Image (cartoon, rainbow, N blue to C red):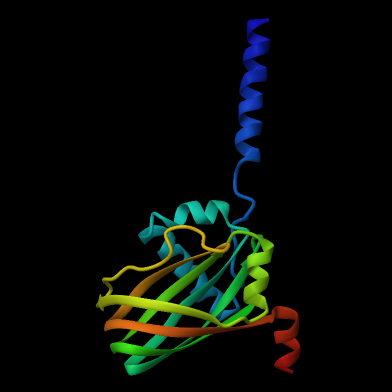
Length: 190
């Protein structure tokens, strides 16, 4: 009887652990898609360098990852990058990142960015391409520098990782996203 109870307890524990694991399956990039391969490398780098990202990978409904965003500023600034949207473990489209900024800022940098979406509604905001306004302050030197939201804010959490650059800034910016589902992007290229 004790053995049977122990087996039931162990089985229940194993089932509970399996049920509580992430609903966000491990994404595998298409090896023929250069952007997806670069994005997967950025995901790996962020997982390895940013311990705070682990909870988001476990918890998020979806994420968008930009393997490289280039930003240049001298009073006024701009940034651009192209990334991949991963929803429930599958790449579903590409997304562009456009930023215009103004303030006390000078320099240039390149960084990887991942935006985690807590639920489908927050992902839909990105897909609709709504403009977002941000305030930024920071100093980046080489690969040093850190930023990002420490928790979900309106269902979204951002974690950037510097690749290279030298920038000092205190600025306000507008960010615009353009999402193109893979079905549409395939027909656009024809």
